Amino acid sequence: MAPLKAPGSDNYHALFFQKQWDTIGGAVCDWVQKIFDGNPIDPNLNNTSI
Image 1: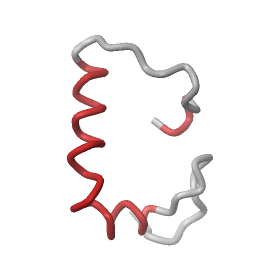
Image 2: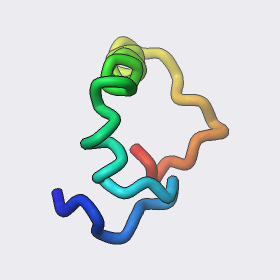
Image 3: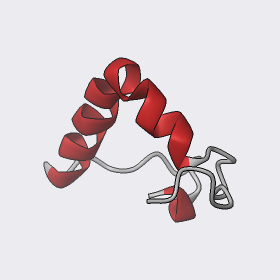
Image 4: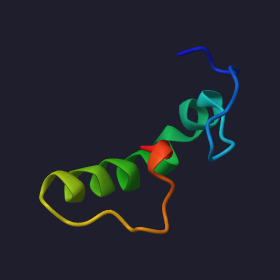
């Protein structure tokens, strides 16, 4: 993933996630696992960010 390509609708470049993964990675993985376990996605989130 090119780190500075145009950001998604959340306005975060891939570089943000790459540099901050040690801080946010656990929370992101936990959130995704909960979705796979059947928990609903918050309707306030932008679907294109997933």
